[in-house]
Length: 250
Image (cartoon, rainbow, N blue to C red):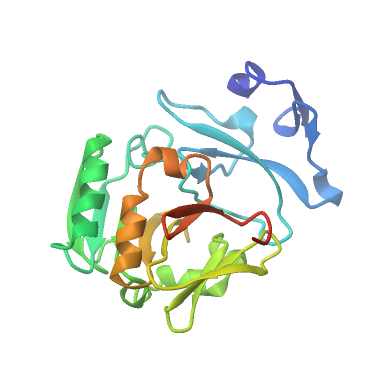
């Protein structure tokens, strides 16, 4: 809260513990469906700003959104290379890159991008045991990635996954959704997706996936801070990076 007040005009509620307004933009509070949320190192905070103690190097992002489609977007990609670099509340996660093919170009590229960002990461096969308290980066096409129960959350839509995209046609297309959960655009061969999932407090999974090998390659190419900054999740197709949810039809 002190950090926010030092950088913006802030109004609070509930005894000063929760943010109601930042620089004139107001949440609708209990009776509405728009509010302020904040993320530390890409993970949605589970307490009020006044009670959150930051650690050196933390990346804090505030988001004003309509939560009628989903009340929780528990993890986002927009703080990369966090949370892999600094973890959460001063505790770093062991980082594990799980690849369908450890020799593939996308797998090697993801490991290199993490290494260049100062993130030590081990390698493992897809679906390796020991998933709790480990940050997993899954690099595989959707046909392979969906074998993981956590990854299949995406097929259930934003209310379960917090990701405004879903695979369809047996993994041959990616449907990109707007904030109202409607399909705005459908991408096909070569389309990629980078998304973060946090199904439980002990699990964190990033997906670098797509339609076929070309889609995974496109997603791996996009794993860099400028492309991901402040995004919930991103899709990439034909060299175009789209932040999700999409803002309108195009």
